[in-house]
Length: 377
Image 1 (cartoon, one colour):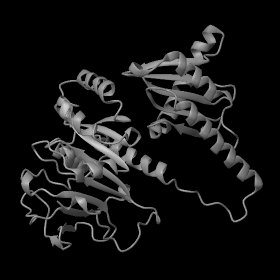
Image 2 (cartoon, one colour; image 1 turned 180 degrees about the vertical axis):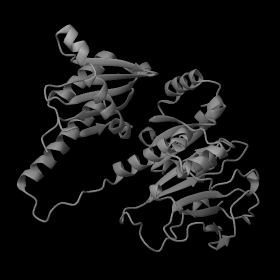
Image 3 (cartoon, rainbow, N blue to C red; image 1 turned 180 degrees about the horizontal axis):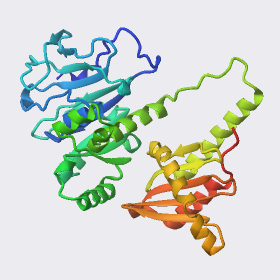
């Protein structure tokens, strides 16, 4: 197989987002677990076909290209490259070890999605293990109704610890009978696979759903592709954060404010790192700005305005009781939401996995996070 060689970078120009290296997202999983569907869900277009000829199946590398989108390049172990006319169930890969696909998908600019082929006998080679271990982000795909089998655990146990850059994706979620099945499976996977993965995501990527997702944001969210794309984008930001451009001679106060925010973020992240079961958290100021933290910090920015609206709606309750509501705890499915209103009139909140949360520790941590509020910009 070609996997033992470095994956090629055939783009003669750097990505438009700058000179940063591409984020490598490796999509892996057992035979016919739904890896292609997961990549299609992220791309929100049916790029990779559902191929059944496992013996001739190469690894796939998919990336965004402003020019040349639609090209299908076959790379052979001998170093030769040829272009295929189409990519579908009938494509003859001619023994190529890697199929590189260029697509127009600006939301994954600066990212390369790599799908690893897995043999039906379950024997995973050294090359595949090395690629998984070296991934910037590993998406391990498991069929939801059979999630986290012993054979999968055996494969992941051969990798070095990589929990902070690994997500388990449960495919074919549309085949589950009801919402309670989702909750039951998620709780079991969180409990049993938690040491290997920082997050659990569901995907329901039937062909018609992916086609609809191309032009329909709701369909994309329903497919599960949007949350995966958000996770990929967040991982890229964390690895090489963009530095906002500053005026040529910024005022001294700007430097001081930036340092204060950076120091506050570091302090909060240290507190948050001690919390088992943390999904995300946020600290908002009077102006509504949100300092997000936690493994899925992108969710905090979405939660903040909704929490603000909910808390603001407690006015009638406070009027009747003659006192302000200082702390709120809500159960949201398998999660707990803890909210505190510090004196600064902002909000501090934590979203946690209920089955892995020590409430006393979480409440103490939240009070520490809320204590000093956000520094003024």
